[in-house]
Length: 125
Image (cartoon, rainbow, N blue to C red; front, top):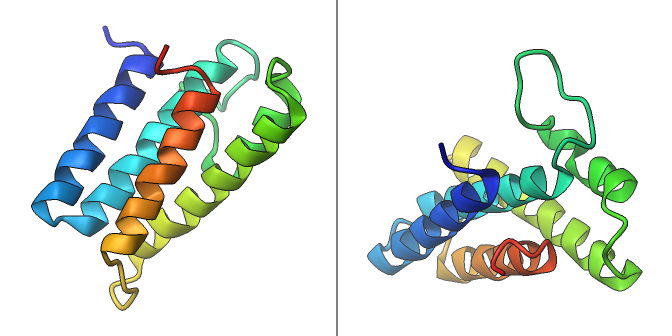
């Protein structure tokens, strides 16, 4: 069974491929889920999730990072949390707002933010 770090990397690679193929909404979606999986990996067994869930609620991710990830320098935790917020917002636009403009710059920004999260939470090491 894949661990959350492997799921994060798989989604990151998928996001890159989707960007390269021009599927920009899919790229943003996979970039967010790569970051979300990285956060789940970093949280480990720290917080309790809702019954039947193996992941945190999406809206609690930054709060849980603040509460349970003490190993990062403060500046890096702030950067990771900001990247997660931007990714979540872009993912909502990409997945639920058909009139939202998702262009290559937004997709590339999502990949950059994803990299900040994966690198900061040491998923890529």
